[in-house]
Length: 400
Picture 1 (cartoon, rainbow, N blue to C red):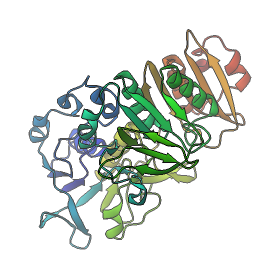
Picture 2: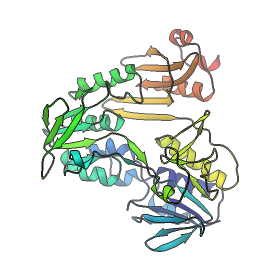
Picture 3: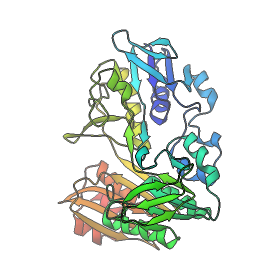
Picture 4: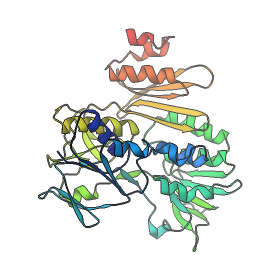
């Protein structure tokens, strides 16, 4: 059985390794647009940008792992198209045959429109090694950076900038940072942390356009104010890389639509990671996280080999900003109230409920709350909100 994997990121690498671990003996070819071997993305906007991690430490596996396991890497080579009838993918004019094809193509940062200056030199996004390499020289003490978007990527970039001695301003069009993904309590906690370190956060602040001709020099806000900038970082979300799937006629639904086992609308083509949407609790979701990329890819690998097991997502996420380690378990969609638990020092956790059902937990420097919350959610257990609020030892909730 010949397996071709398009996309050499976290999901692609996990899928290839799992196939070998499960005993698959046939050819595996992994094709990636980037020249670097599969690497971790989360440290790019943190340790790597800070200069605390070398490129080789980003790599998911040592380069010889792939050769030793018979995984052919074709890097720096974008796939031109998929021929479903012939069961081939085309790379540099060569048709590569497959019996099973996996699309682990990831996602792409949304950019500001060219009509408002989004293509000016000095405007950056944070997604790939090349993105961060291009902007690293900009992070010099005393310079001004404006960050468009108050999500996790933007806030992580702001924290790095501040640590390196820059003046950072975050523009958020919504009433609060993290509004799409977190409660007002979490937003307020993170905003206070950043402001305490000198980051300027402007909420309910719309961007009119970027200023400059040969290079970005600042921004004009919708209220007419102009702010100077030496460079701009854009963190306004990502879009699934589903172009190949669309051109091949596969079904799309907020990304590449799969069934519970990871198959697309073509039974010989599978998908996993940021680009894939899948059934979840009566609906469909697409998860943008390392945990999902690995778990879903490994489930697809098993199902390619005939396991026939539905993928059961166990969402978890994290973000490091200054001395804050924010750990998130579950999905808070549809919550209607929050239970707050304070721990030692500045540690705190916010627990999301919909009625009597525990949906998610945001743990700020509180690994115990995260661990207990994750186990409760994955086990389908929901302690009553008043019990959660009053129980001294969280671990006791696991025995209830």
